[in-house]
Image (tube, rainbow, N blue to C red; front, side):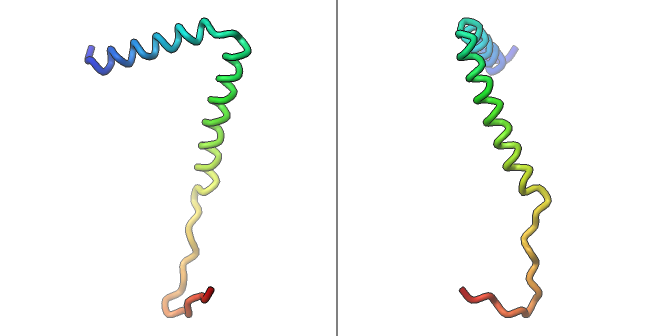
Length: 65
């Protein structure tokens, strides 16, 4: 087992032990927050999926602001 894997196992094991000792309401709040964050990132990423900026024709006059 590499040092990185050993550290990862210790961190994950410690996090699991801490979560087991948390009150139910706090566990639910953390779970909801984590799910919400993942859902938001996924939604924002997928909203622009396949979108391409409009192609301007060569020689077309530029839009003035």
